[in-house]
Every structure is written in C-alpha cells, then in structure tokens.
Amino acid sequence: MGTALVTGASAGLGLEFAWQLATAKHDLVLVARDEERLMRLAGQLEAAAGVHAEVLVADLSKREDVERVAQRLRQDDDPVGLLVNNAGLGLNQRFVGGDLAAEEAALDVMVRAVMVLSQAAAESMVARGRGAILNVASVAALLASGTYCAHKAWVRSFTEGLAVELKDTGVTATALCPGFVHTEFHERGDIDTSAYPEFAWLNAESVVATALADVRRGVVISTPSVRYRAVSALARLAPRSAVRAVGRYRKALERPDGPVAAE
Image (tube, rainbow, N blue to C red; front, side, top):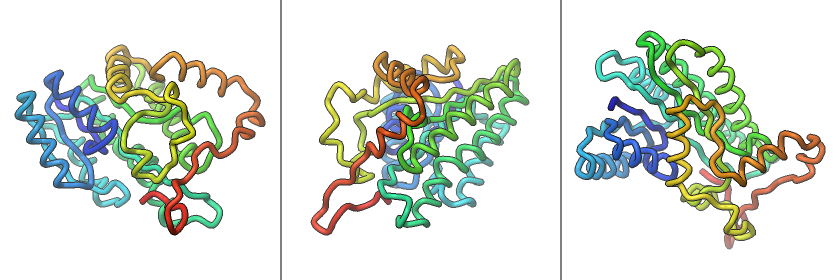
C-alpha cells in the first residue's frame, strides 16, 4: 500500500496516524525525538500489522535534522507516498516577556519544518505523478490567541496555496483542522483543560480516521466533527473584533512555583 512518513509519531495524533496507517498496510517512516519510544512503536507495529516501520530520530527545531528527513522524502527507492506533518508543541506562555528561544523553536517545528518537508515531498511526488501531503493545522488557525494560533493559521493558508499549485499533478494537499483532542498534547504543554466541557473534546481515533478519509477524497480543509465545522464557520463569519474579544483561551497549569511553559 506504499510508505507514509509521520512526524511527531511517538505520541498523540502522530501515534494514532501510525497505527491506522499500519492497519491499512502502509509501511512507515516514524519521525520524532524520542528514540526509545520510536523503537518500541516500530516493533509493535511490525508485530501487530506485519508492515515495515523505519525509525528516523530527528528534532525538527534543528535545521540539520529537518534536512535529514527531507532527504528521506527525496529518496527514489522506497518512495514516500504520504507525508503527515504532525509534529507540534503547546507553547503555553505569553509572547511579551516570554522565552524567545522557545518561540523560535516552536516556529521552526510548526512552520519551517512543514514548509521544507512539504517542498521535498511535493517535488518527489509530482515527478512520480502521485502522492499526498497532510499538514496538521487546527481550528485555532481561525482564532487570535498567541503564536500557536499564528503558526496554525500559516499552516492552513500554506496548505491551501499548495493545493492550488498541485492541481492536476496527481498530488494533493490537505490541512487537518481539529479542535480539542484527547491526547497528551495539553499535559505536555502544561495547559489547564479543567474548564473545557467534555462535549468540546474529540477522540484521536475519529480525528485521524476522518483525516485519512478526506486525504483519499482530495479534500483540502479537513475539519472533524459537525460541532467544529460550526465553530469554524462562526469564526470565519464573525467580525475579527469579536474573535479577538474571545482573547486567550488557554491557561497554564498552576505549579507550586507558578505556571510552567511547555518545552
């Protein structure tokens, strides 16, 4: 069924993408920073699904690591037919007075790496006349709350532009725009989710299943669930002053020594 490369594959949506793609008999290239997690996952996928799982340890905030992943996408033997740009982080701090180095790392992971890897994949795929790129954005792309929203807005807009450029090439580009999803993302980012009602949450299995179904159909903007499609429509139609009035929707967890930003 071909090979898929998934960034941020060791946890959260990336982990679910890996399992669903393996179940569909795709070989995998698993990309993340945690070698131990990746090796364990690769063994589990190979044993359970009978696919080949290649491990590529990379920190996408580092340019040399991004280039190694890009080189794998350019590889002609065992080509990658689906790129899932999933890696991300919840940087829960204010921009003014925040850690600028952490902001730059987040930008590198969620913007620069997406751009570099998308170009490497698209050029190889167009030459073969087939392939798909799935970039994980967010409903947050339509909001105005910190640099995370700005990064995801870039991913959404970039993917739409890429889809236009790829028309009639046999290659597609899809931006996945979920809302709140039950994963370890918020915990790892020290984000307090106690105020969010249960109906606001999606499960990772359904989000990934919807995304992959939309990729197969060539959908450009994939928004899982009726409720988040409604939220997206409201955010697009509302005056931007009203969107800004919503303000900062994420709150840091309180630690004994104060709020802690994500790594």
